[in-house]
Amino acid sequence: MRRDAGCGRDAVTGAAQRVAAAWFKTLAEIGGVPGNAARSRELLQDFAERLLAADGPQALRELGAEAGRTLVENDYTQPEAMATSITVLDGVLPREVGREGRTALYSGLSMGYANALRERTRAEQEQIRQAVLSAHRTGEGRFRAVFRNAALGIGVVDGEGRVLEVNERLARIVGQEASTVRGRSIDEFRDTDDTPEFCVAVKDLLAGRRAHYSAEKRFSADDGTVVTWTRMQASTVRAGNGSVELLIMMFEDITEQRRMNQRLLYQATHDSLTDLPNRTMLLERLGELLEHAGPDERIGLCFLDLDGFKGINDTLGHEAGDRLLAEVARRLSDATDPKHLVARMGGDEFVIVVPGSMSSACVTDVAKSALAALADPIELDGRKLSVTASMGLVERPAAGAKPIELLRAADITLYWAKYDGKARWALFDQERNEREVARYALSQALPTALEHGELFLEYQPIVDLADGRTYAMEALVRWNHPVRGLLGPGEFVSLAEETGVIVALGRWVLRRAVADAATWPPDRTGAGSRSR
Image (tube, rainbow, N blue to C red; front, side, top):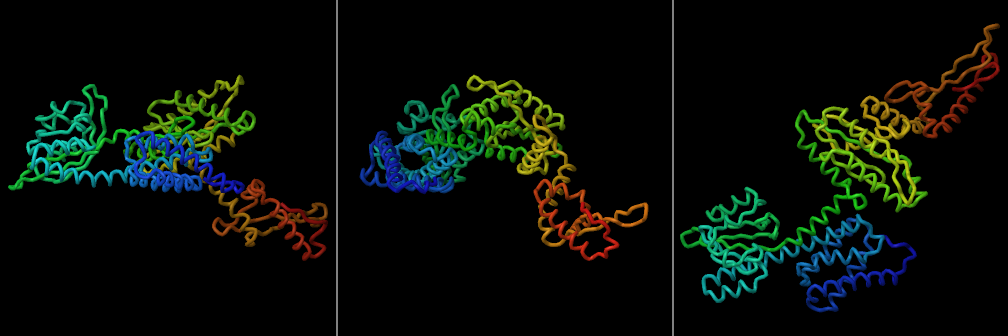
């Protein structure tokens, strides 16, 4: 977040202290403050100051990852530490840290915390594994003690896949009493979410074809509701003859972490105002559709932009504009098929993706429905606002298409609709696009052509038919284009008028014509000359 030049150091420090104090208080409430409280305050204060000075989402993401790692290193490993950290930061961060910056910060914080916790957990799991194995072989009392003190769910399985022992933590994860778990086959604890690869891997462990396996594992209740998500680490213990004697399985509860990651993912891929998919998700979904499209599949795209939305913002304010956008989003969603993707690109721009289009008629029908949905006035603060929109449509084979190319073509076509009078749709036409591209290229090259001497004049005499005397010369401008050859004024004068180059062009023609006329004999120049 950039600080204004007038924002003093004291003000920044004061804001950082408020953020750090709220953060420290929240962490203390969920389970105390590990280690030295003063040291913890210093760490949080340092991160708060750097956070308020960070410039841009990437810097916030990197800072968040560092903060997440530091929390774990300083023993803030309670299951609620990450979720509460995000909640309190979201409440105390200044408004200048916008939604994109906050999402980047929380994503980095979550990722850094999860990675550090995973590394720490792996080290602890190996220690526990060795302790479990030692305890299992040396005595029941010690075995029970290890189980009682472990924060992980631990299960010991024999070479036939029968559960020999589970601790209370694993029993709670499974959602059953420990006594009902012992003696059962691990196949009985399969979940509908288990992939074929997961089942094969467990069989390979018991058969001795692999020694270690790690995966996420879900445990569900009988009614199908999810009880717990875990990260499973499994490793084998071999007997003297090389066969699998034991399979030690450890389960880390990651339910809250998954929920938090899902919330962060949703925030990163959805527009906070309209709750529609945002540009990130739009490009991702488009990419997936195009990548997996068959040779005969087609796809359609509608790019919609509200007409005159800036005027609404300027007259009624941005809050009213936001409510209008939310209503537009609702109407567009209601007017389209559920299989279509409605996304907000940003501002007052929306995109509707039409997968499996059969022809351009499919896309034009969607456009007509969308425009009809906006036909009824939208009421804001007692005022009924008539809202219109323009739409650019693209419909083409999906094979070989790229998301950015589709969006660019639809965006170009949108401006055709705007140019043709607004409140309508226009369908992409390759020939028209090529003409527009060529015109644009000429308009961009025209100023350089003036500087490089590519323009020249030809003169057409104007003769009095009564006596055959030339009394004037008409100057005609020509462009000797290095690629397209000789161009007449009809091909570039209108472009000069549109871009403002006409003033410089007119001055050049006047100077050139006057200079040429000064060299002509008096009997040829007659009364004068005029240019075109």
